[in-house]
Length: 422
Image (cartoon, rainbow, N blue to C red; front, side, top):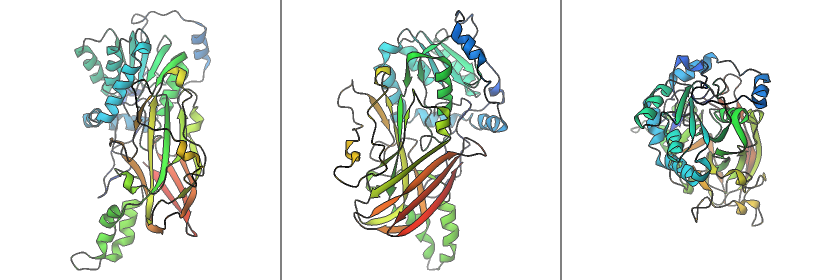
């Protein structure tokens, strides 16, 4: 995620031996982040029209809570931005998307939701944008303004320090760009800020980058991880420490883990949990996402858990209704199953839509994959069915947290795993 905009991530979490519990990506800080910043008319003179009057009649934005303040203060660390910028798969995908859509961006107005250091805003300015509003709710906005100035772009890029819900822009925009994706795609809830920006400022026929996203789920096997964290206790320098196993399982697997796996760890074709069209999705759709799944294992192996990953697509406005993977809850059951219709993520020519993928078989990113481990593995045979349901919901405690309810059954045994992504 590029920046802090009023909904976002939470502080860095402690790590386990096999990966991170919860997330380690952070965001910006700054106690003043909840103040309103208005882009003055001296910066961009604009006549007020009827749409402005309609905006004034809308309900006020949500208040800046103690959670917001703590969040903004927790994520001012420069290392967070360094990690994201050094993720070449991520950063180059955005740069390539901007250049691919240069003909649309050139001479037009852009808003960068969660600008962070301002790198995406600068890409847009370099592509010929008439004006870029770089919005971030944290103190990193101060540094972003200096970065813009150092690159002689202060007349083009206007940095607004505040929440998207609070800042004022006195004109409609042609383009929204944002790196809003969190672990498990929806963790951190920053997509809500993109929706708010879209509804407040985007012109009809405008461009949103990325325009769409898809979240996937698949069962996995990961014996090395289980051996390192759990089986280690069975024999420690010849001492039987198996009494530690219940505590070890709780410590290692209670929360979601952010780790990198490979395609060899995945037991089946993936299931589509949620497809997001950034042009049409509404805020209430983010509160809870549920789906049923039914997998058929491609191999004999222990089932150690389930992995989430996602991809996002950078299509133009005319292609906003992109080809989407099957929404069928039955994945991988036969040669006729719609899973075979999942389009390739590889571009065969530069005119095809660009896709940024975090799948296990693709080059690794800082998002890695999000794993939900079972406390005890289940031995599955080739062609054995694994079925159940999963629900991802915003925590009532803090909407930035995510509750994961996973129900699964295989071989006549059924289980439920509850996790909280903090």
